[in-house]
Length: 490
Image 1 (cartoon, helix red, strand yellow):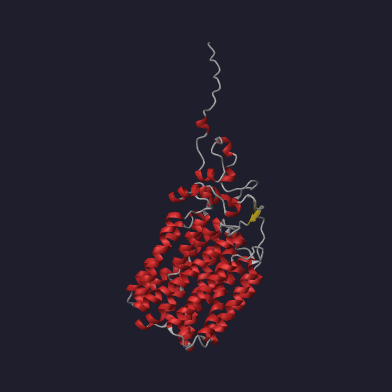
Image 2 (cartoon, rainbow, N blue to C red; image 1 turned 120 degrees about the vertical axis):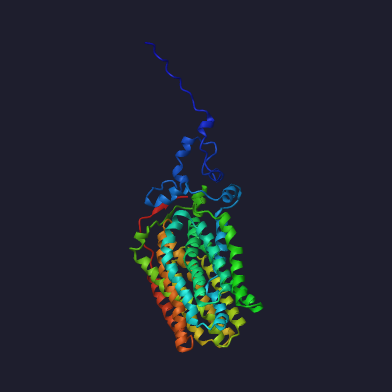
């Protein structure tokens, strides 16, 4: 029987060795070399999946393994290999524009419409405040469902739908003829403001920034404060030139023009989706850092989760209640509508300055001390608004209150991410956000009811000052939880 000769070894052609190339972004940023054979590139797969050398895999890495299966939009994939800087700054620009557009249904904007709309329809302040409260309750139901979706799929679709829904709802408010239709439209816009916007904006920010999270949050919060400055003034100018219906059209058109297109074209879920890593991992000179990774169930079993939630529940009724009724209170104290709008804009400017400056404070300073200081500013500002006698004292008291608002709007998202990590940020924050918006909804309602009952805003300001004082104690008690975390080396 003939014996077949042994087959000679045939080396693989080079072009077969180099099949399955890595994304161009990974080659561009030197995560891999373009001439490395496929079998050697597999050795570094853990690093490309988002794990640094020496990083052990665990349950928390599921999102990172999913990242390579998530496809980024075409424009970012075209731009990333050609940009001379980290793409996270482009993402931050999208977040800032969406944050500006977010403020269409903010209480500071609605406060400009309180007087003309109540005069036009004969509604009470409590009836208008109820729309803010009901929208917050709806957001409390929606937020725990959106949070895990943002963790898995990213913020792009959520933010695009949020901007579109907000702009259309604001423009439709110019057509209302009844309180019922006002409730339907404004509650829808307010639900988007309190839930999807918050989770989408800070979920995207925390995914792209870790070591520079405070600085990035400063820019994002400053953009939102800019919306609180610009949109009330846009509304007031439109109302002065025409009527309150023109004011809502101007607000809605601004929201759509500013916020939609950048998010749709440029936003990317995570840096791992395009072969990059969070900012602190891009710098090879940085020392190894420890990033906490908590699941939602683990976080809810810690005292820190409930103390941060208590702080939120105490402070956000103050923020919403004072902000919504600030302009009517100032007008009742003798200021003109234009002067009242100027005070509100001044408050927003100070809020933006405070949030921008706080983000640059050293990261080694405990965030709970900063939160306590902001709560103290809100308490003093609430008490000070009782005694205003002119525009100077109004700006002093309201400005102090605005500094506190700017601080908590920046510090709370940073605190949640610093305490519990970015892997399940949406799920954890979604639960806390449901508590936040429920409490926030109670503030305007309580303020309106106390004003209708007593005829002034003095009782509500005393109540809000007391709540903010209790928030100081809750912040000081909220120490960072301890869990065996995973070390991430650059």
